[in-house]
Amino acid sequence: MKALVFDSKVVQVEAEEFDVSQALTWVDITDVNPRPKVGWSYNGIVFTPPVLLVIDRSKEALTAEEVATLMVSKSIITRAEFDAIKAAR
Image 1: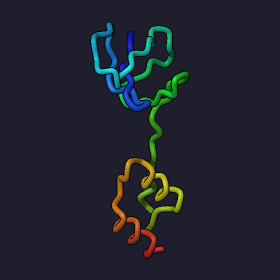
Image 2: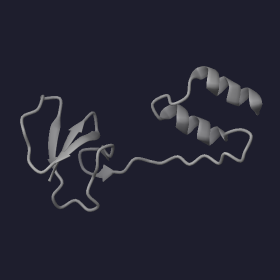
Image 3: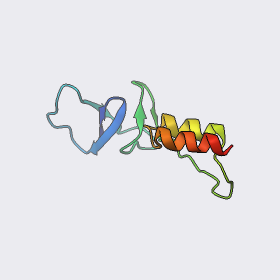
């Protein structure tokens, strides 16, 4: 099995390699356990699964750690949403 990696992320998993852009890299994952999937990270040595953020919706506001994690996670929330959360504290 082969993982196609772009920008340190697994973007595709295939049984065999095929020609791709030079921006993409094939990595042999035949003996990697657990087997990486699309969305996993690759640092050139180790594959890691994505981190799942579980938010306790019973609270009135998010913790600072939850907000920071959301902001880092590819800007899942807007600045206005961040300001609203901060103001609610």
